[in-house]
Image (cartoon, rainbow, N blue to C red; front, side, top):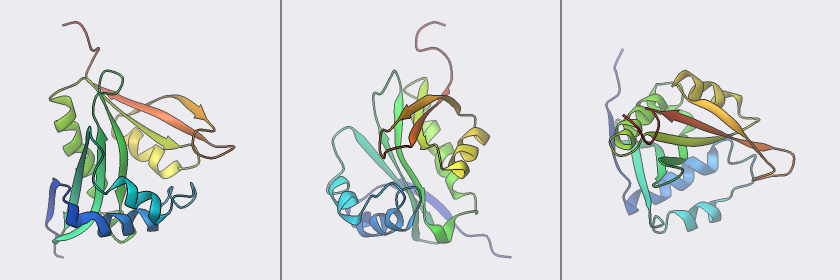
Length: 159
């Protein structure tokens, strides 16, 4: 059995098409009604205050993460997506662990949202120590809620 080589690096403009393809093929984005045009706007270029990260498997773009800095005394994980062909190989957990090192070096909190219907993502984040804060009803589509999640290394103030 061969083990794929995995690398995490900053997002580069030449990753744009691979990233748009991954997001276009992935849930929950299809259910939420996102299109390639939505993603093209977001990644041309990255908006100010965001950091993009790419996970590669054997040299191919296999996933991405987008962090928004300075959100509720921490950072906000705006996007985390692994290509359908690369799911189930531990790349999501590897990318998330990398992001946590980056964020927790500068802040005490990392936040994320998951759609209430996305049970796989909810289990993924729970396994990695994220706790549900509460729902934000009808944020993206009618009749569905985004669940705010948080992982913390402690209060923002104090010893």
